[in-house]
Length: 191
Image (cartoon, rainbow, N blue to C red):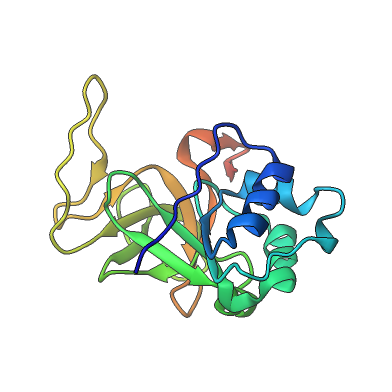
């Protein structure tokens, strides 16, 4: 099947929606800031987004109000969110209907990845407790940082990019913050 790729030189929500309508776009990768700008565009309720079969959001956690807006606008089965890193240590994914059952989650591990939440001594934490997110997948990628320390890892091959989060009882991941954005005050971690 042939596909047409539509690329914008500079983003504006108006032009993006014009292109979706004109080219009958079926799939898009849209980070949350772009989703927000489209959702807040004057007259968006009258625009035709019916050709969109799916979009993936990543690069930042999608705010719940925005996720709900898109779910209501195009349908829960068409709204996807992906969490991962360019290092390829693992990823999670969640579809809109799952998200409605686990609001705020970025999903469960995909592609045979494994996910664990560890404390500062790399002890696994139970569901509901915030700690550092570590992931592992079969056939891990090879990567090197030049001029920067390597990623934190465990002896059995789990890696962390420094994000903090927690899992619920069903194994869905929720992002709390980045370790570098956490401060300790009065003996408590503040994110």
